[in-house]
Image 1 (tube, rainbow, N blue to C red):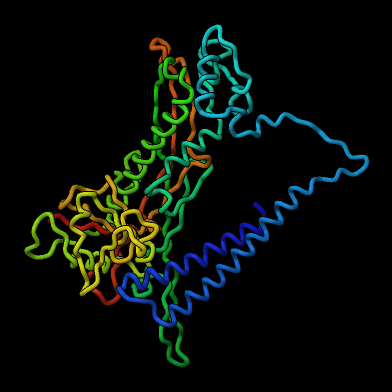
Image 2: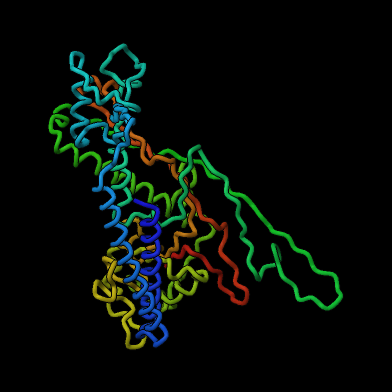
Length: 431
């Protein structure tokens, strides 16, 4: 993709986001667009149309340049090199085909598929001298298939992409932080100054947060009988590894203990709980529960927030109204892009990570831009070995994902003139 095309795509996304913000604001307030909002929306749409036309022109130009061919000047020469190392799949058409090659190459008299020894998949010293055995008795899975597993693990309603994520090349990273507020008593402050008086000085109050990667590992032995069915394995094993990686990562993002895993958004001291209403019955959700949760969000968090809800709580949302307007919109024209609809204009994620209905945390409101994560550059690291389960006639497939995370703030935010604290991580209390 050319630089111009990337810039145009970024501009298009910006216009789409601006249009969405205008309609979300009106939907959250239960009204139609004002004249000014309608004009702003139309202006953004016109800009979007111009941007889309520019993208089509750029794509057409790129295609024309590609098909025009390359003119080789007189005296030039062409050097041919083996491009196998640059092929992210190492020449394999699928994960199943790779697994079949591993099985055949790991057998004592089996022939070694030369694609297994390309680049990073080259064999090294193992426990026993065996040209069919890769480093430490195994072969590295080609990068293309590792990438497939990592992509699958972020599909659906995965929470990791919603966080403020950073890829790191080492084992950790240190971030500076400033948790002061404009109305607080420390940090950088401004003062009203009388004429000819000495200025009041203030200085930043900076701290640091050090994060170190934790290891999440899946080890899966596969029988040789299953390896013989290459097509089945190609769709079966990566999906299972991805599903487990995603589940464990998301659970840690929300509730991790910090001991050998991330500190969860609701495990730290920054989370708050909105209690039930006086006399509220169990197995119910009332309007005040929802409005009070929204009121605890920091300024600017509402447009970035998501509801995390247990499936059993969904029926209780039907019928909730603000005056004559329903606050829960199931899948409809007013809730496009959210499979389970919207609540007060914000998307709903129905999740098994939520607590049981009527327990604390069965409904949560989160802005995960306040949650920082680091992941190891390159995504999931994968490898195979036939020695670990040699006596069971099985080959082991291993996937390692290194990640750490923690809330950006250590405590809830005190308001300038309010009694309640604010937080991007809010749970509804038990009822």
